[in-house]
Length: 145
Image 1 (cartoon, rainbow, N blue to C red):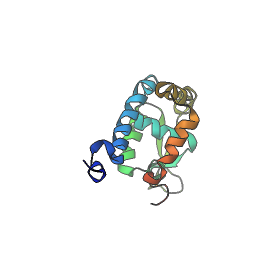
Image 2 (cartoon, rainbow, N blue to C red; image 1 turned 180 degrees about the vertical axis):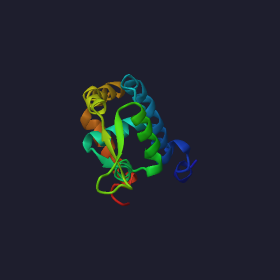
Image 3 (cartoon, helix red, strand yellow; image 1 turned 90 degrees about the vertical axis):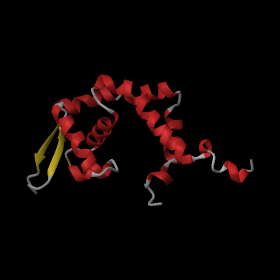
Image 4 (tube, helix red, strand yellow; image 1 turned 135 degrees about the horizontal axis):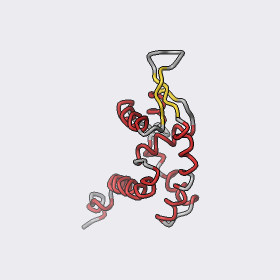
Protein backbone atom coordinates (compact mmCIF):
# COMPACT_ATOMS: atom_id res chain seq x y z
CA UNK A 1 0.00 0.00 0.00
CA UNK A 2 1.29 3.46 -0.86
CA UNK A 3 1.17 6.59 1.30
CA UNK A 4 -1.71 7.84 -0.82
CA UNK A 5 -3.67 4.68 0.00
CA UNK A 6 -2.92 5.23 3.69
CA UNK A 7 -4.79 8.53 3.51
CA UNK A 8 -8.06 6.58 3.26
CA UNK A 9 -7.42 4.21 6.15
CA UNK A 10 -10.08 4.61 8.82
CA UNK A 11 -7.51 4.79 11.61
CA UNK A 12 -5.79 7.69 9.83
CA UNK A 13 -8.94 9.84 9.72
CA UNK A 14 -9.10 12.85 12.02
CA UNK A 15 -12.89 12.81 11.81
CA UNK A 16 -12.98 9.23 13.09
CA UNK A 17 -10.61 10.05 15.97
CA UNK A 18 -12.71 13.07 17.01
CA UNK A 19 -16.04 11.19 16.85
CA UNK A 20 -14.60 8.28 18.81
CA UNK A 21 -13.03 10.62 21.38
CA UNK A 22 -16.31 12.55 21.78
CA UNK A 23 -18.22 9.35 22.50
CA UNK A 24 -15.58 8.20 24.96
CA UNK A 25 -15.42 11.57 26.72
CA UNK A 26 -19.12 11.27 27.53
CA UNK A 27 -18.56 7.79 28.98
CA UNK A 28 -15.64 9.10 31.08
CA UNK A 29 -17.83 11.89 32.50
CA UNK A 30 -20.88 9.69 33.16
CA UNK A 31 -19.79 8.12 36.48
CA UNK A 32 -18.40 11.45 37.70
CA UNK A 33 -21.65 13.31 36.93
CA UNK A 34 -24.05 10.63 38.21
CA UNK A 35 -23.62 11.61 41.88
CA UNK A 36 -24.57 15.16 40.86
CA UNK A 37 -27.70 13.87 39.14
CA UNK A 38 -26.58 15.26 35.79
CA UNK A 39 -26.09 13.87 32.33
CA UNK A 40 -23.23 15.25 30.26
CA UNK A 41 -25.47 17.59 28.22
CA UNK A 42 -27.16 18.80 31.43
CA UNK A 43 -23.71 19.45 32.92
CA UNK A 44 -22.87 21.63 29.92
CA UNK A 45 -26.06 23.64 30.43
CA UNK A 46 -25.25 24.08 34.11
CA UNK A 47 -21.68 25.18 33.30
CA UNK A 48 -23.05 27.87 30.99
CA UNK A 49 -25.54 29.02 33.63
CA UNK A 50 -22.91 29.05 36.37
CA UNK A 51 -20.93 31.43 34.16
CA UNK A 52 -23.87 33.71 33.43
CA UNK A 53 -27.39 33.59 34.74
CA UNK A 54 -30.13 34.39 33.93
CA UNK A 55 -29.88 33.79 30.20
CA UNK A 56 -32.38 33.77 27.40
CA UNK A 57 -32.84 30.33 25.86
CA UNK A 58 -31.37 31.52 22.56
CA UNK A 59 -28.32 32.97 24.31
CA UNK A 60 -27.83 29.78 26.30
CA UNK A 61 -28.09 27.66 23.15
CA UNK A 62 -25.62 29.93 21.34
CA UNK A 63 -23.12 29.66 24.21
CA UNK A 64 -23.34 25.86 23.90
CA UNK A 65 -23.18 25.92 20.07
CA UNK A 66 -26.60 24.20 19.98
CA UNK A 67 -29.93 24.95 18.41
CA UNK A 68 -32.56 26.27 20.87
CA UNK A 69 -34.63 23.15 20.13
CA UNK A 70 -31.77 21.06 21.53
CA UNK A 71 -31.36 23.15 24.69
CA UNK A 72 -35.06 23.49 25.49
CA UNK A 73 -35.80 19.89 26.59
CA UNK A 74 -32.62 19.84 28.67
CA UNK A 75 -33.67 23.03 30.42
CA UNK A 76 -37.11 21.53 31.07
CA UNK A 77 -35.53 18.45 32.66
CA UNK A 78 -33.25 20.61 34.80
CA UNK A 79 -36.32 22.61 35.85
CA UNK A 80 -38.10 19.36 36.83
CA UNK A 81 -35.04 18.51 38.96
CA UNK A 82 -35.33 21.88 40.70
CA UNK A 83 -32.00 23.20 39.41
CA UNK A 84 -33.25 25.96 37.10
CA UNK A 85 -36.40 27.98 36.57
CA UNK A 86 -37.82 29.40 33.39
CA UNK A 87 -39.52 32.76 33.63
CA UNK A 88 -40.90 35.24 31.15
CA UNK A 89 -38.56 38.21 30.85
CA UNK A 90 -39.99 41.45 32.18
CA UNK A 91 -38.55 43.41 29.25
CA UNK A 92 -39.93 41.00 26.62
CA UNK A 93 -42.76 38.64 27.58
CA UNK A 94 -42.10 36.54 24.45
CA UNK A 95 -38.67 35.47 25.70
CA UNK A 96 -37.86 33.08 28.51
CA UNK A 97 -35.09 33.72 30.99
CA UNK A 98 -33.41 30.64 32.42
CA UNK A 99 -32.09 31.21 35.91
CA UNK A 100 -30.52 29.03 38.58
CA UNK A 101 -32.50 28.06 41.64
CA UNK A 102 -30.76 28.05 45.01
CA UNK A 103 -30.25 24.31 44.58
CA UNK A 104 -28.79 24.80 41.10
CA UNK A 105 -26.41 27.48 42.33
CA UNK A 106 -25.37 25.29 45.28
CA UNK A 107 -24.65 22.35 42.97
CA UNK A 108 -21.73 24.37 41.58
CA UNK A 109 -19.76 23.72 44.78
CA UNK A 110 -20.08 19.96 44.33
CA UNK A 111 -19.19 20.27 40.64
CA UNK A 112 -15.87 21.93 41.46
CA UNK A 113 -14.42 18.42 41.89
CA UNK A 114 -15.44 17.27 38.40
CA UNK A 115 -12.39 18.59 36.47
CA UNK A 116 -9.93 16.99 38.90
CA UNK A 117 -11.79 13.69 38.75
CA UNK A 118 -11.71 13.73 34.96
CA UNK A 119 -7.98 14.56 34.93
CA UNK A 120 -7.35 11.63 37.28
CA UNK A 121 -9.41 9.26 35.12
CA UNK A 122 -7.53 10.13 31.92
CA UNK A 123 -4.11 10.64 33.50
CA UNK A 124 -3.61 14.17 32.15
CA UNK A 125 -3.01 17.44 33.96
CA UNK A 126 -4.81 20.73 33.32
CA UNK A 127 -2.09 22.05 31.01
CA UNK A 128 -2.17 18.95 28.79
CA UNK A 129 -5.98 18.97 28.62
CA UNK A 130 -5.93 22.68 27.71
CA UNK A 131 -3.42 21.98 24.94
CA UNK A 132 -5.64 19.23 23.51
CA UNK A 133 -8.71 21.48 23.73
CA UNK A 134 -6.88 24.35 22.07
CA UNK A 135 -5.59 22.11 19.27
CA UNK A 136 -9.23 21.38 18.34
CA UNK A 137 -10.07 25.08 17.83
CA UNK A 138 -9.78 24.95 14.01
CA UNK A 139 -12.47 22.25 14.02
CA UNK A 140 -14.80 23.82 16.59
CA UNK A 141 -15.97 26.74 14.52
CA UNK A 142 -14.42 29.12 17.04
CA UNK A 143 -12.37 30.84 14.36
CA UNK A 144 -14.96 30.89 11.62
CA UNK A 145 -12.86 28.40 9.61
